[in-house]
Length: 297
Image (cartoon, rainbow, N blue to C red; front, side, top):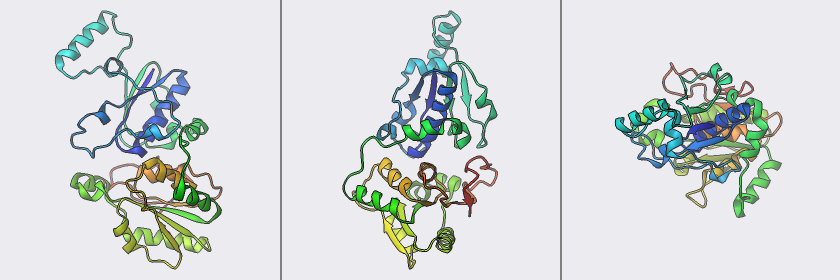
């Protein structure tokens, strides 16, 4: 059995599921998700909830006993000690085996791990699931079809030179710790990206996805058509991501959400522009984060 710990928003949960699903397929075993962190207080983190329900993923959740037996931890020291005694006596089904992410680079040991595994990390690299990309794309197809204005726009985006533009603000600017870690992409970055796209495409249609549409409108002045996705708020993340991946080209924020919008897009010869610096911390090594065909700006 593979158990993957879910943390963060939709984009992060998708990375975690994809890596866990890839490992479960390689080992020929079941994948279960540990959502205890999402269901808990999430102290010191932006509060998030489980968001994979909008996709055709295999929804199987690990219970507290399975999680404890695989990661070797319980809520208290006494419970942990009791768990170890049960394991030493052969009364537990699983032995502790934790695969913990070390840094932001791809971990080659992922390819050789065996047995029952508890996975803890973000796993933000296509290399963790590139061998089963068809399965991941199929399971990240949206469960319910788009409706109304969203459905009409989705059809139009596939016929145009549409360009998704993700402007991430929210907790990136509202929480000092998050801002210090991630940083934000400024107006200069988006102007450069729009200039690059405009030089390569005759009539681009920029489609802006943002958690602060009022602020974003001020920075998007262009002779080309611009649509802001700002109706029916609050909107499910899976709906916006479905619209994003219907676009032919992509301008990413430093966000796993728009990473998936571009990766799930299937337009041949598409342009994908991403920020050269993904994190504020220059020591964060992001060489394995972006597919080789994407451009850093």
